Length: 82
Image: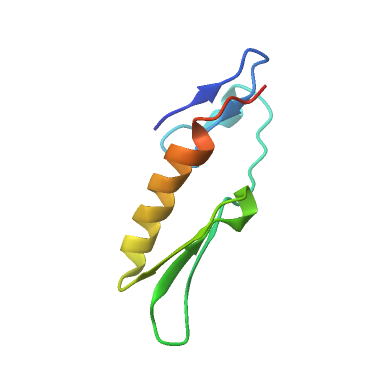
């Protein structure tokens, strides 16, 4: 897991249950994407909630989830917070 901590103390990360951040302060969780199938059973990762693209189609949901995670880490997590 990668945590991006701004000089002001704000932490940004792609949600995972490996660390319970409620022990260090207020937590605000928001959706970064939607992974959904289309009518033909192909999977898409829609990153519109964070200003990103729609990725896919993928044959398997797990492939869409992996692409979603990779995109979030590369394009959303790394930009500076402040």
